[in-house]
Length: 170
Image (cartoon, rainbow, N blue to C red; front, side, top):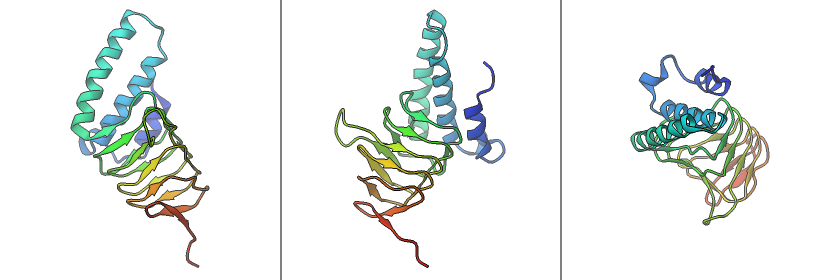
């Protein structure tokens, strides 16, 4: 397979030799591999490769605690610090150059419910949750342990349970 520009952008946000240093890159690699398989022509080889994908997806998900399913749309440059307990709903959309820390959940509020859309350059603190039909604008920051249930404007900072936008101190 030719090089994947999305994965190259992911790697650019990691230190040298990330496969030996940070397990989170394993989950991103498996996600990008699976997405590329979906672009291939249907057939027996693709079906066999998808079965292999699901096997390594489950192994990496179990080993790293990062669930990054094929259905999610993730822009290039994803960075996951402090892997573990990260769950992304398969219907979620995540923009370019976003940063996730341990315990982040991006998903729906009830089964079959709508899922979040995350803009570019969004930074999530540890254990932040974004749930439901929410749009997080580009450049926003979501504070640690915040529970976002409403839209967050671009370049804003949201903190608390439920999260509210805070004004910067001047």
